[in-house]
Image (cartoon, rainbow, N blue to C red; front, side, top):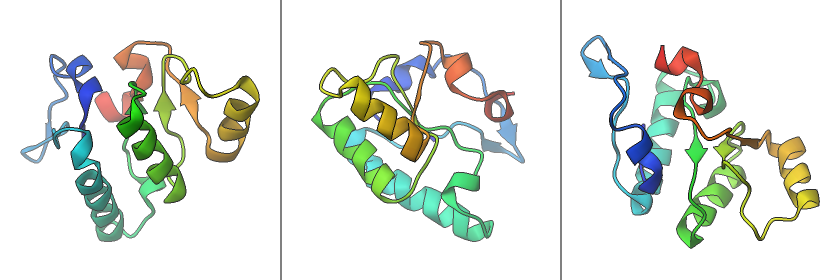
Length: 123
């Protein structure tokens, strides 16, 4: 699932299909984040697992107010392993970022889609 401004990095990549369902589904803009969260929750319920157990990659690459609100919402819902970047927002000190890494498995991307999205998701 993709949404928001950073998805332009994925638009030209071919992810294929699983039983006729596209492996990449565009859910709209930042304002549609709640829908994406609900869909991920429904998938977790359907597969009898947590959202963290789903083969989803969460990559937040822009840090305007809406993206920060989405990140805080995901963290408050217990979502772990979110990739941001390639750098943390300027307003987050190194000490605060370290706490976020340790507590929420928050990660930095090196700036390429291929390394931000695990091979199990794209390959």
